Length: 152
Image (tube, rainbow, N blue to C red; front, top):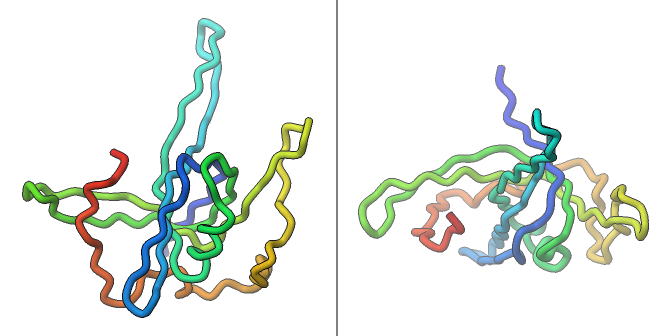
């Protein structure tokens, strides 16, 4: 038995980019930053940041495009996917992404450091509905295009 499950809470690094494929299938991508802090032996606080490539498909992609923006704090549940492609110079490139199954936009309360879940959106999507596993899967036969526009 194996488990591939990721839970992240972090901040969006830039506005989501939406693309449409055959039959109107939507895909949104954006970077999400998670940070950790610790105190070293000299008493200095050190903060490290990890950047995660987030991918949402179909209806979730369309909701994210309308509700997520640079700086938004998100709670994301998903799985790790690694894919590869050959760039224009013939080099193999690998991309590790988080294929999100669930996301919630969190907002900070004024004057309090904790986050709370934002009010339900007006799209009619209920966050507590049981997830349908194939709603956020890439369409059958999907082949990624050359993505030289990646931020790394």
